Image (cartoon, rainbow, N blue to C red; front, top):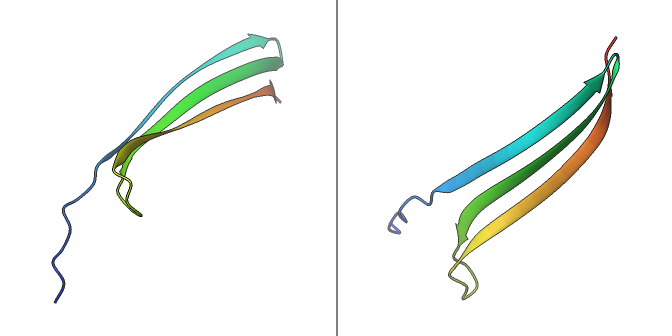
Length: 59
């Protein structure tokens, strides 16, 4: 039976802002997913960063 590898921890962090005027709004958000990549000869901490934005409408 193969040995069980130790657990690898990851983090997910984010922040956002929204501006509303009556029924319409604009939002923006940034996220960072942090984890260790240990495959194919690499041994690095990875940061996957996502920026998103959009319009919102309230009914």
